[in-house]
Image 1 (cartoon, one colour):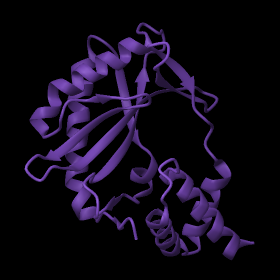
Image 2 (cartoon, helix red, strand yellow; image 1 turned 120 degrees about the vertical axis):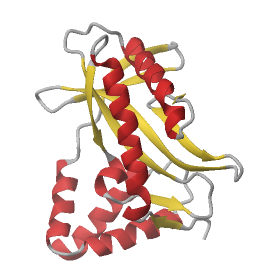
Image 3 (spheres, rainbow, N blue to C red; image 1 turned 90 degrees about the horizontal axis):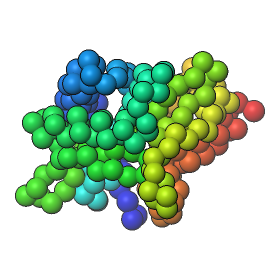
Image 4 (cartoon, rainbow, N blue to C red; image 1 turned 45 degrees about the vertical axis):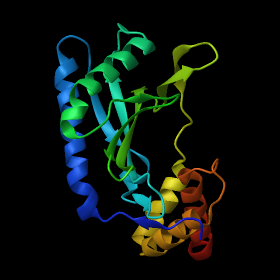
Length: 212
């Protein structure tokens, strides 16, 4: 196989996760008085406790975090919010073993590296979001063509998929979900096919197998 994805044991990622939360708390303290407050939630594989890494690769494993900014009066532009957060993370990241932030279209990324081994140990992608009472959510995106930062609505969560996942957990099919998901990741050779798509395929296939 091209890949050899394996699940990262909780005992391996939990200490790193605690260090990451320490960094986030430092940034919260840094910004609270002069700029804005924010909360954070884990999303994606981190939220599902299905963190994986390809042991044949050198990119380690990653955490996915949503930063929920509290700026109801819109005192700061999307570009200012992104810049303020990036500066604060950069101030504290090196002391906790992370490189400076990398700024991409969707997220800010920090990485822990093994310099001598020329590999990434772990990383974290921060999406900056704001929430509305009707359940909608926006995220800051960088428009490369216009060189501007804007709030863009995110697709609404797939409630049917979430219900199916809960059903499979309740009926003790989750081990099979984990096995099929990792199998699909190892077979996948399409770089444009993201982990989310593979997870959705897995949930739907096993749901159809047992629940219909």
